[in-house]
Image (cartoon, rainbow, N blue to C red; front, side, top):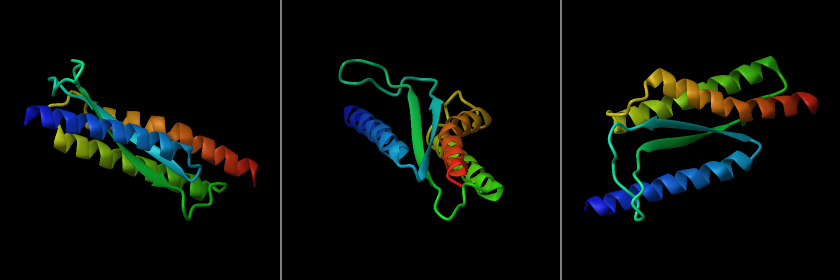
Length: 128
């Protein structure tokens, strides 16, 4: 049972990682990836590598936003922050033993996602 759970966890993490790469290539969406460090090892891979870092990615759509305007930029930032908060809260619910605080998780996830968001905003302003 434990081995099956570990295999499932590795599969989910791999899927989330690949999905994040595919989503990041879409210019109309920003990927928010939240992560937490778990205090204890939750398992090992088939090759014996411990699994300790957990992450979750959410896509944030730019649909309906005028990214060349201040209002559109603010709305995108709000969407990114909301997705980061939701992802971090879900990770905290699933892994209450993690050592990362909600505030740290949200800030890190938001900061990383805003790099892509700022690229989209800059591109929209150039195209205006």
